[in-house]
Every structure is written in C-alpha cells, then in structure tokens.
Length: 313
Image 1 (cartoon, rainbow, N blue to C red):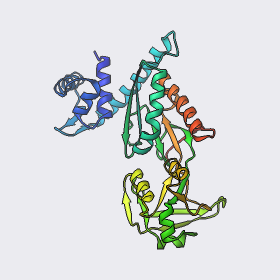
Image 2 (image 1 turned 90 degrees about the vertical axis):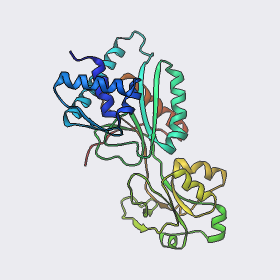
Image 3 (image 1 turned 120 degrees about the horizontal axis):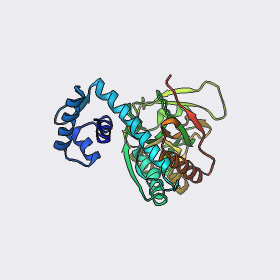
Image 4 (image 1 turned 135 degrees about the horizontal axis):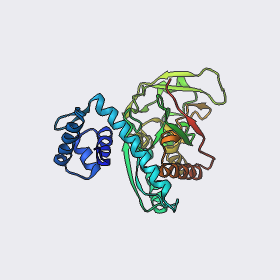
C-alpha cells in the first residue's frame, strides 16, 4: 500500500536535481533514500528515475507520479489546515524562490517579518539567477520581469521601471547623453540575465503610449551577470547602466548615481509573486501573498497587488 512518505519522495525527486539534494530536503541519507526509491519502484513495477552519482533524470512515469504526488500533498495540507481550530496558526513548510538581488534586499527581510507572525512555519528561501524555471519546485516565486508560458497566478508587487543611470563623476568627465544616438559615444554597462539579449536596449519617448519606440544595439564596455555588480561599476564611474528602479533608487537618493535620459522610457520589469491556481493554493501560501503585497505596497509607496493570470502564448 502506498504511504504518504512515498508521495513526499516522489515530490522531492521532481523538485530536486540529484538524489543527494532530494535526500537533504527530506532529512534522510542518500543511501536510505535510494533504498526507499528501489522499494517503491519494485512495488509499482515501474522505473521512476535514472540516476547517476551526480544527476537524477525522471522517467515520464516518474514525472507524472511526482506532479500528482505534489498535488495530493497540497490537498492533504489544505485539509489539515481547514481542520485546525485556530485559523491564524499556520504550520508546515513554505518554499519561496527569488532572484539573487531582489531576494537578498527585499524578500529575505520580508520573510523574516512573516516568520515572526507565524512561528510554526518552516520557511525555505531559494535564491537563483532565474527563479522561474520550467520545473516548478516552489510554493511561491518572486520574479522580476515578464513571465511567459505559465498557468500560475501573478500578483503585482511593484511596477519597477528601468532607469538609465551614471555617476556624477562619469557625467562630468564624459558629458550627459540626451538621446539614443548619444549612447554610441559612451561606455555602457550591460547585465546578462534570463537569457535576454543584453546588448539590445529598447526605448521610447516618455508618454508616447503606443507610439513605436527605438531599439539600439549596444557595444558594452562592461558585462556582468550580477545586477549589483553592474550598478556598483556605474557608481564607480565606469559607465552608464540600465538598471531596475528597485535597485537604483537608493543610489540615486544618496547622490551616487544620477538618472540620465529621464524623458525616455526603457520598459518596465514588474515584480510579481507567482503562486499556483486557487484550487491548489494552501492557506499558508495565501497568507504569504497577502503579506508580500502589503509589504511591497508600503515600501513602494503605492498600491500593489493586482491579480493577473499569466498563460502561455
């Protein structure tokens, strides 16, 4: 007879990239997990995973089992929560994924405050370069930028424009660009992330609405896959950087950076929290979303939290 530990095993195999990582997430040793997996496969008469010392590859049956096990565990947790007399006492594990920069500066402090409100919760924060992978292994994902091919629900935390910035010293030495053509004569700093073409900058005159904008091919003087590094290079006077509003705002307020070409828009990269559809959403996920929307609204100084469903193209 299948047990709930088998469901947790299948969900962990779907979530993790190796047997050792799955074992860590379940709090057991890799040999113990390997033995449990062999017993489960024998009882089912199926091969669920092909594994090596470093990698774990689920078979099609293993992927299906993992997905359905995950859904069953969600329902089990929701049932347990619905039977609790004190609805305010949340328990269980909440897995959150976020990008490195925004995760460190915003999500981690928010989760610290959230945990004090719900001390029985176990929180996991996974910081990644790309927090929205094809294999969804989180209960909630805080993502910066457009999201495609998803049936999860997105709640907007911040509109987050992109601003072109440089240090006062750089602008004194090299002049201030006024229009896109001027950027060809400046050292530009690009950020490589989310498989985007970082040398293509899209812009349009501010307030132009649907008017077609311009696309400029940048020959970058500096490139980094870390936005904080790129911003610091700009603060050090190395060049001009196109950076998210959430990251540049403090340096601008402190005078370490100045915004240039403010009469041009470089596109927004909205910050959203992505969660499963309402049907599979636990009480702790709902509580987290409400908290993040409120916390982001206070820090942003504006209302936040519009509810959108993002679907595939």
